[in-house]
Image (cartoon, rainbow, N blue to C red; front, side, top):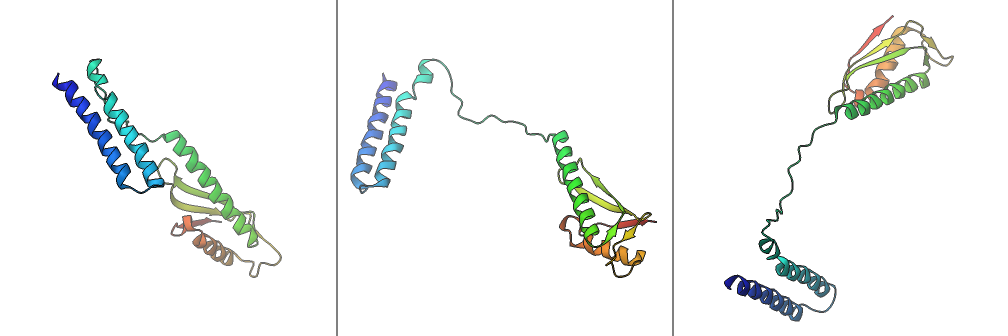
Length: 163
């Protein structure tokens, strides 16, 4: 009988505490929120002996899920990033007046963050626009290096050329 009396005493205590808070707190939003909170607490106290009556334990802990990276998804995202960087670089170089070059970027697409190792620029079929100042390879390399240095993801990446 002590279990039932403790349960009734806890219900009575929660109700008395809620009535006391209602008298102390001024009318308005705070009083309304405390009523809602104490209603939930009272409901929880009322149903708390149900698991023991049903001979079942309720586990209130969160399950421990083991989160793993989905490597295929990560690989596809990194490949998309790599393609976007390569097309942006190609577009910037063409806007500078340098055409017919091939750009290859060496990177680790399997890592969590895309790791770019180097940039390879093939200058075999290079051509220049009419308004490009010095139409020589060394000036083209300088322009390409300037463009690469302004791109945040390629800031300290080494560049190699093939002629």
